[in-house]
Image 1: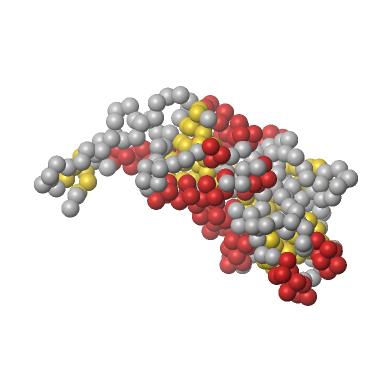
Image 2: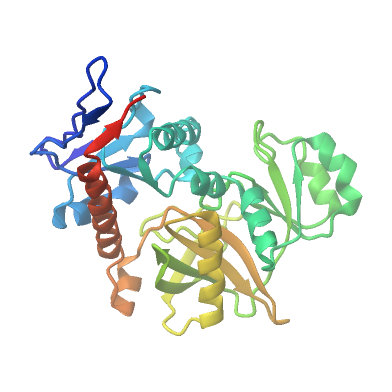
Length: 349
């Protein structure tokens, strides 16, 4: 998918002739800074593409479902924004995550600036990595065990405290999450490939109950607080804030839904903790989720890189999420373009 049909050209290089010590590198006069948007789910990208077009930012969509790249010459844009979601495998796009990991690493090795790059994407697609990071920062997280097979479950089952939440390490919009009530319940499920899908590292995690039944979420852009909201899930583990996001029910026969409410008076200390988590994760655009429990704990449960801004929340708080994102990308584009213009001399040995 291509957005904005203006021709995008990278700076041309002037290489030295034999015996020369220096060469001059000048950008072409019609060089147009551009953004490559790496993505997998069209539905979530429409508001972003619209905002980029309105802001006059030249951009191109890079759909990892049908994309290949040269490991030695992958850079075609001034900077890149990664928008691949960990839930892609639930939409039949199992290769999207591994493709994105490889592409981000390749772009960064070429010197490209990648917003929400390889480190943050690794964090986005591994709950274990998220929890280890948050543990290092000293914030509270749920007690968690990682298991890779039914045999591992049988070996460790006496260590578990029930009830538990069973979830894949990859995560993704509540995918494959189940509540396990007791040992007998777990033993009845361990051989079911739909519960323990092959190839997935699974987590058995302490059940956290918030004091009011909601999950808190804050969003940031370039380290700056954007908005906060509370999510009240009903018969679902899917907290995806996108309008129209399908809610997988916790069990068959029940109606699943989620209610989202703007939170203008979010505590400052919670915002500070969330900001530090995103800074440590090197996440340029993203959010953090936690629960405040009735016994006074603040337990952080998730780091999100695929921020989706609901219209009703933005209107209630008077913010324009993707407008802020575009302002941030414009600043970064200007910096990268200036780097090209400043590379006037290069010494060769």
